[in-house]
Each structure stands twice: as structure tokens, then as C-alpha cells.
Image 1 (cartoon, rainbow, N blue to C red):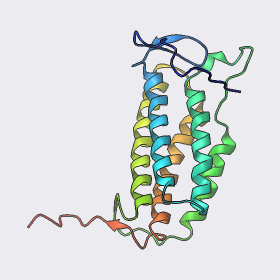
Image 2 (spheres, one colour):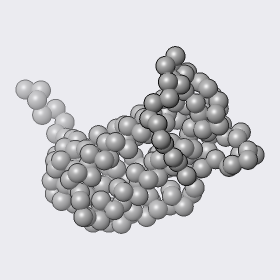
Image 3 (cartoon, helix red, strand yellow):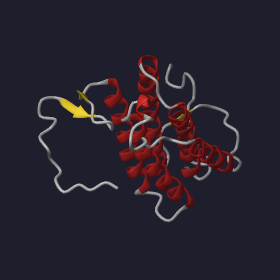
Image 4 (cartoon, rainbow, N blue to C red):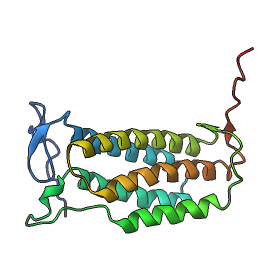
Length: 190
């Protein structure tokens, strides 16, 4: 359980921060960048939820926000820490499977795409598209981290699936695709 009785510690005043295992690293460390992008995506989903209150989509997004804290905890603790006294919190395959089931359920109600979609439509959809792009950036950072260090494979699968989920959720938020803004190739070329 987390207990925070002080918000500032002064521990990062010289540009260093602690990982989940207590190791001190620079705040620009690739691992910190990766879980920082996850935190940013979580905040963006919070903005989307301002426009989804009481809906089935809001319940999904609430679960995802909690999962993103799990994911941040996973990424903040190097993989070789599994044998420690308190095992690291890791994303599990069941969380990936839940995303896939939710994608399939939402997608079943959508008409097939005939064009790429421009981010926009309803406020919820616009924020979900923004969250999707932040998750894609996080995915790029996590794959770079994976090239340098071992990471939980389910963490990367979760991020990959989440970007798909947020795309389909944005379409769902746009009246099941009726409010999607479609790209018209070459529209403004004269």
C-alpha cells in the first residue's frame, strides 16, 4: 500500500530519481521517459473521461487508468528484480486479454472504415485520439528500452493493444463512427 505523507522529498533536486527497486537514475533515463509517457497518457484519458461519465466507455477507461498505474509500476522496476523480497507488480496477460475483448465488443458495432480518420469529432473522441498518440510515443520508448534492457513482454503487448483500444474507443465515442471525421486525400491541393 502506498502512503504519502509528504509530497516533496528534495530527492530529485539534482536531476536524479528512484526506480521501483530503489536504484537512483537520471530523470532523463529511458526507463523514466517510458513510464513518464504512460503517466501522460493516463492524464489524457482523465480528460476524455470528463466527457464519458456514466457510460460503458467510462467504466472501461476507469479500468485502463488503473492498469496504467500497474504498467508504470512494472516499467519502473527492472526485470531482474523478480527475486527480491517484495515481487514487482507486473502487467499480466489477463489485462491484455481484457483489452482485446473490449476492442472486439466495440468494433462489432462499427461500420468498416473507408478512409483514415482525422482526430476529432466529439470532445471524448478527440481526447481519446490524443491519448492514443501519447501511448504510441510510450510504445516507441518502451521498444527502445527493450533494446537496452529486459522488460515484461506483457507490458509491451498491453501498450500495443491499448493504442488499438483507444482508436476503437474514439470511434465508439463518435456515435459508433457516425461522427468520425474522415481524411479526404488531396482535398486541398487545388
